[in-house]
Amino acid sequence: MTDSTSLLISESLIRQYDVSGPRYTSYPTADRFVEAFTEQDYIQALEQRRSGPAARAMPLSLYIHIPFCEQLCYYCACNKIITKHHDRAAAYIKYLGMEIELHTKHMGLGQAVSQLHFGGGSPTFLTDDELREVMAMLRQSFNLAPGGEYSIEIDPRTIDNSRLDALAAMGFNRLSFGVQDFEPAVQKAVHRIQPAEQVFDLVKAARDRGFESINVDLIYGLPEQTPESVDRTMAQISALKPDRIALYAYAHLPERFKPQRRISSTEIPTAASKVTMLSRSMAALMAAGYVYIGMDHFALPNDSLAVAKRQGRLHRNFQGYSTQPDCDMVGLGVSSIGRVGATYSQNAKTLEEYYDFLDQGHFPIVKGLGLTKDDLLRRSVIMALMCQGRINIESIEHAYLIKFKDYFAKELETMLAQAEQGLVQFDDTCIQVTEKGWFFVRAVAMVFDRYLQTDRTRAKFSKIL
Image (cartoon, rainbow, N blue to C red; front, side):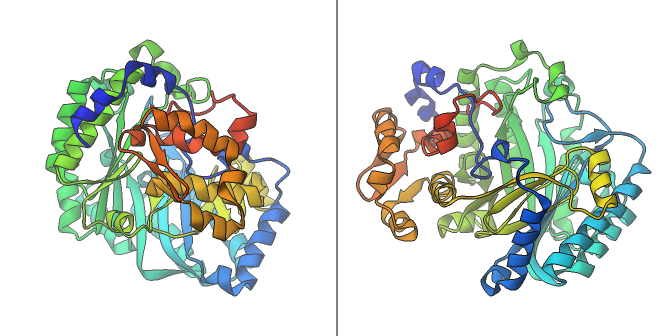
């Protein structure tokens, strides 16, 4: 990928694809979950996993949502609670324990876990003792496998060297630092001030303590950003050299996320400017030695994510790209989303409702989805595009006993226009996303989304550029 790639993307193409669309951390997407999916459906999925030897052998991932933050970041679209009252964490941990007990009741004790992620909010809102308490509860109920990936999201403003020591002692081996941008003007515009020197010092200290992988989250398309300012941040990131980088496009959805109403839409860079930012950022990162994993992820060549990409083992889940294949994910905490078997489920989004369900001895499930054969087929196609940039047509036909060109006749006809635009190449054996097409991979995947074919209302999604 070179900076000249941006020259191949015409203004008319940018305008055409300056639309909203899913990020495809799942298919069907979470907006398709229904309230008709009940606690009993979820219990059935858990018990099928418990009783089925094949399912039990499947890797298990745990996601724990910690919703609290001390300070509001204007760009944030996460489910969070802004508070300086740290005593609220004690009650939340108690209810996490109740939810864990419900899972072991229906799954059994000792399920092997190969991936664990604390997200938020700010997980480091919890004190070290509180984090130790949560980890102890998890170890009592699950078997955290040696060599697993155990990660936690870090707000650099809440961490020092002693806390890094504590996290390492708890068993965390991967850290994800929320940086977003190093430019002071941008940090001020989004209400998140954290000097670059602070992040550099913490990353060095984390490396000294032997953390296996360090990720940095960045966002382009924020207010006050320009291609030139993003260039400066990329130069600093190249010097910082984290193992992984997640480079997200800012999704401005003020009608859904109240904090974003503090950002005027007139302050947001244009789609053309965002494409320039993305193109130049990709060129800078790859010049610095990073492997482009896909869509918004980069990794150093020896990182497990880059290795999985080379070996064709890349997958995608609710946290983004992952090395875990076909992984069941149990989501714990308010608003968490999980996947067990051929089902998706989501917890209550408010603390009051979450607590109320658990007080009554029930899972806090408020909606979900049982996947149909068509859902599973299209999920395989969409994830192949999102993860490998390629669909092996024969493999899909054998796995789902279909004739690809017949089943997807309408989709292939639609894709002809994308082929003419240079976004994809396809024949009777495969569909391949081109180098230019990676800018628009979400649009390519959207062709196969049956739900979007019948519902053209996409305002609920972020812009794909």
